[in-house]
Length: 285
Image 1: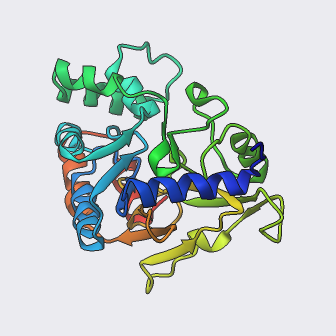
Image 2: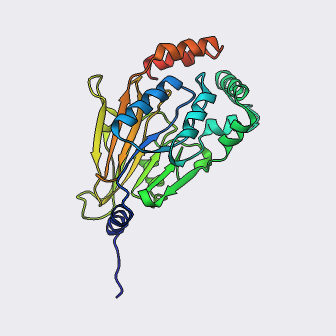
Image 3: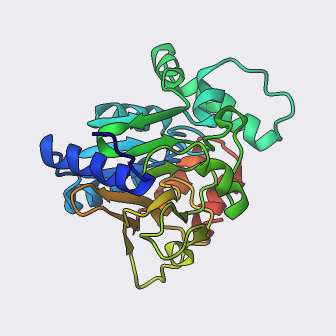
C-alpha cells in the first residue's frame, strides 16, 4: 500500500521504532566548550552521573583558554561517547595553522595549549568530523552551524536558526560555539499550533536559585539547542552549563553547576595565560 508520511509523523515513527524495538531508554549528557577547564568538567560529570546519564555527546572545543587541556582530553576520551564533533579550538590546536590575524590573547592561548599536548593527543583532536548524525537517538551534533560548519559561524537569532533548520534532518540538533545557551523550536506540522520558528527565551533565564530547566518535546517540532559552555560561560552566569537529553521521556534539560572558579583562575595565572581569561570566568562573560 502506498502512503505518505508528514515530517512530524516520520519523526514519530522513527523515534518509536528506535526506542521501542531497540530498547533505547537512556539519558545522554550533552557537553560543549570545555576549553581545558578541569574543575568545571569534573563538576558536570558528577552531576551527569547523579542525573542518571549513561551516554555522552560532545559538541567540540575540548581545549583552549584554560590550563588543563591534556587532562580534559583524556577524560572525554574515557567517556561512553555516542557522538563527538570537532570545534574551532580543537582544529587550531590540533593543526599547525598560521595564526596570523588572531588577537594576541587568543594566539597566546592556542600556542600554549599546543605545547601542553602530545603529538598523539593533537592527532586525536583532528579526527572528529564537523557534524555527526545519530539516527538511533534522532539527533544531529555540530559545533557551529549545519549550513556551513567549517566557517565557524554563530546561531544567535531566528534568522540564523532558519538556515540551520534547513539542513537539520533529525528532531534535535545540539550545538555550541557561542558559549551562550539558546533554544529554537520550529513547528513542522499543524499538529503543533505554531508552524514557524520561535526562540524559547526561558532556556537562558535561570536565576541563581535555579539550576535546571526542562523542555518536553512535541512530535510536531524540531529543536535547535545551544548547550552553553562547560568551561567558559558567556551569558552572565558563571556556572558550568550542559544538557541532559532523555530519550525515553523525549525531554531536554539544561543544567547549571557550580565549580571551584578560584582554582581554575589560579592555574591560568600560574601558566602565564592572559589575565582576561581568569577574570571572565568569575563574571561569566
